[in-house]
Amino acid sequence: MTGDATERRGPEEERTLLRRPAPAATAADPVLHVLDLEAAEGLAARRIVLGPAPLSIGRSPQNGLSLPSGDVSRTHCVVAVEGGVAVVTDLGSTNGTLVDGVRAAGPARLAHGARLGLGPFVLVYRTGRASDLAREEEARREMERARRYIAALLPAPLAEGPVRADWRFVPSAEVGGDGFGYGWLDARRFAVWLLDVSGHGAGSALLAASVMNLLREHSQPGMDFASPGVLLSQLNARFQAERQGGLFFTIWYGVADVVERRLVFACAGQHPAFLLAPGGAPAPLTVRNPGVGMAPDIAFRTAEAALPAASRLVLFSDGAFESRDADGAQRGIQDFIPALAAQAEPGLAEAERLLRAARTGARPGPPEDDIAILCLDFA
Amino acid sequence: MEFSIAAAGPRAARIAFRGRLDAAGAERIEESLAAALAREQRHLLFDLTEVPFVGSLGIRLITGASRAASRRGLRLVVFGAQPPVQEVFDTVALDTILPIAADEAAALVAIGA
Image 1 (cartoon, rainbow over the protein chains, first blue to last red):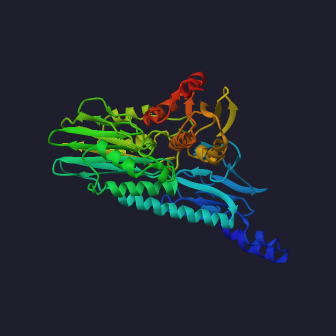
Image 2 (cartoon, rainbow over the protein chains, first blue to last red):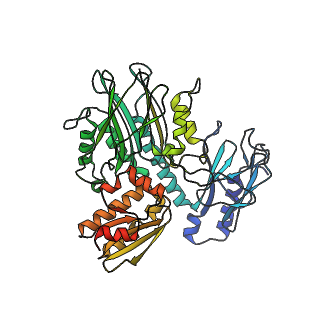
Image 3 (tube, rainbow over the protein chains, first blue to last red):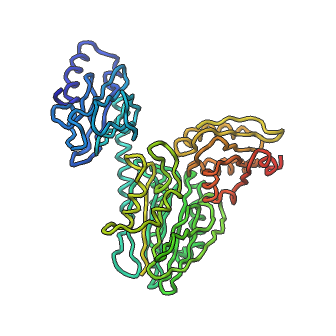
């Protein structure tokens, strides 16, 4: 099989349409079946429109779609559209063809949005009227802009000083509404926070961005950034869910006094952050409060912890542990705590090690929810 | 995700949910649930016995329904949470916002119906 699937289809079909005019709506707006190749291994992202002939995919250039990687077999699989249904058939490839993370045993029917994994490459199958697919594509681009906007609000790592900070952030395909930040309030007090807006998508991203814009200034009239409980009450008054499209957010907010070596924190609807003192087990830092915006007039409780020399504070979003594994089983925070306690790996940043642990065993592809991991090291 | 409504005693309705109350599940039933509850004149018992997972939009669905109910002078109680769901409720301190009961009998006591 040679040539691109797009080329095989184009001219043929146009002639057909001229000879036998179909109803206008169908002719102008045909149902398409496409595979969207995600950028990987130096290949740019692109869309392949599936034609009437099957599309062979493999490493060698003779395929309709050639994917150059040692992990892709010479002729790896074939995708065919028959009777309006797209089916992928693995052609005995060495590493298999994954459909939504599960190795396809025989011919597998593809649902809209199905993710095909071939070695390092991911192809997303989509179908629909050309106009609908174009609209979806535009929505995805808008989401990408929201994602970049959130990313631009994140702080730079701190490589030196009494508090060093490093982080990893992997947004989900739909933007999960995670955000975090840190910085000095004055010469001795250092504030750190991590928030997660309920839901996904543009609405969650907008709320995350407005809260982040407020918090990253570390000074606002009428807001007490040095007192976690007071600050969360002030946020709660500003961001009531009923005025925010029903959205609320969870947040962990702490202020470390590096002279007194104490950490004051409040946790609103979120799982604990963890403090690791040298030689000690990870200590959960939590205090029970509802999320910000869930109900009016909440008095947020705070707690305190000592900050021993050379201790590390780790904050992470629920996307780090609340995933489903390849078998669809739900994972919880208890599955992630052993990774916190594990030894550092030489040459590997701690935030990177934890990110890899979070993604180990999860389904391949973009995470279901944003993953944010933040490590602070106190001198 | 789907739900069904049945009587639970003379003054309460039991809304039984089945499936994951994650983002997709919550969005699927959001409008139909709001429409059904807007007509409801009885106190509400949310039965989560058949719900293996509740995400943040599930929490939003429950707290939103509770607010809407209280505006109309009705009470909402949640019961039957499986351990992983109860863990989520603990994390967001849901019990500080609305009553959570172990089973239907306890839920009926909680709303005084």
